[in-house]
Length: 228
Image (cartoon, rainbow, N blue to C red):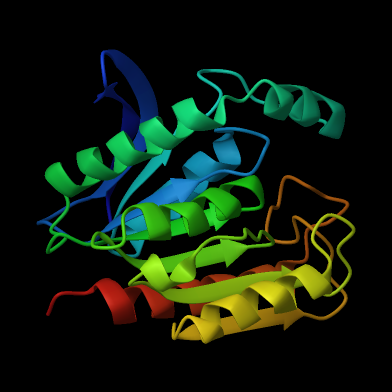
């Protein structure tokens, strides 16, 4: 399937923000918001958008650091420390509106796929925009929200050995979601660590786990977002 991908600009209150948009050839399809890990909008996360578009979705990834990206943990920590959470909340809210209004046949609902830092914002967005967010996929990230507000179903991918997101936190999130009456499928991948899905993180990347997580992600998104 041919894909058209490029950077776009969208309105946020009285300012502007940027995002990477990938659109499959031929007709309107469901929309998915992609929220990067703390590395920012790197080529890898742009590639995730392209892969989603090739699988039948319009994918939009906000540029959370406004043009900056990190290649090391120390750089990522520095960028993360300067992130304005309130401003990012507004940008993600506006990105949701942009995706709903542009190119995607959403039926008024979208999916969100978040990685690590982005996963925590994906979980937040499910509670901030409950009518619009129908499906949430989290890769090695958690957040403590009031999930009774959410209307989404949840799929999670987590590492067996994770110094950044221990399994106790994952199980607590799963418990919170189930207590709120949500449909939840959490998967823990044996012999993996944080960032196991990201092929540009050679010390963590696990191709077998990444392949399975991607297959599960596509199946989940098609189940919950396809309008046929």
